[in-house]
Length: 428
Image (cartoon, rainbow, N blue to C red; front, side, top):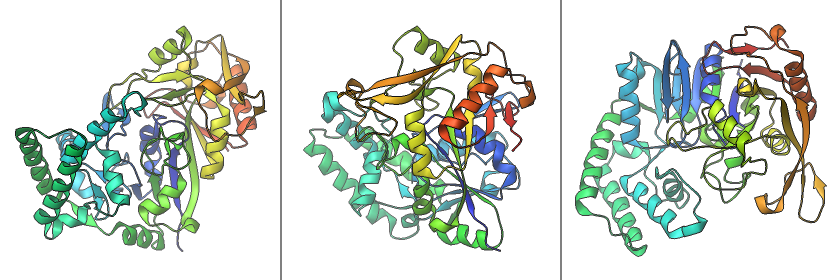
């Protein structure tokens, strides 16, 4: 009997804690497959007293017996991949036994990173705040049908690479950024050495692999990166990433038909954060926002950038649940709010014309939107050592019930700390 693939993705502006949840859920699955994004996404996992940050490799890699797939919708930097892979191998992870890479994944070139920096510089005050990893320019080449893919390294690669590099150099010169020859030579040397390392992995036609696995009755979990509000089509455009972070991205990034999608796990924080520029209606510019940031250790896993913090935004969450077809919700970092007197939740937006709405408008410019809040009592309880939902204080149980009513979707998993053991699976 052909199985359906489940999808796990973020419902806010990324950094929701997807890596930890994938690690927790992986024992249920035979295959974990990453379907989009690049190495700007850092998935953090903590267990057995150690902390790991994954950028391109799926978060199921630490569990024995499962296969992990980097899908065709991913953009891959060979140098960063090699560094990440060697670190895992040195820690004892049997990487080559567990990891397969799609031939259709696009390659991030050294000149893509130079273009990323040059394009951001050219935008001046309107810059988006990218991580500078070359992801945007790589997806641009993909859409313009001029990109290099992993499968290209297997045939006539030097000529293909030289053509792409020379085209990028001309583009850089048009932006007034002539690359330093010595710097580019070093970047290129490291990159080509990393390509040779990449060749040692199992490079597959991933669309056939995942569909055949489903036919064989295997269970697949599709792992997304970033968050719904960073989706290039449905996020807070233009302050978004360059790929489809929503459930539909699992179809295009892995070659799965829509009818092959099963459960959709939507992950959100008990509050809200954002990295980089762009609108954020519930952002707190006061001591409360700073307190949430410090208690939640809200700094980018890859970049170290300070995250902007605010109260939970139910308007955006309802929108994300609708777009993704979420069937189960997973709430992260509830422990960060353990010692607050009151908790706020944005239920509606008040628009510039005075209209109050619970629907996501075309634009959510901060200057034009005022969040409308409900205020709920805090629980003043350290929950980080809890092992069952029966231990939850009444105020926290009421907060869960409030969110489920507002979002019309069950919350089935609650995280109360960074370690994989600090995870409560709720009784359905």
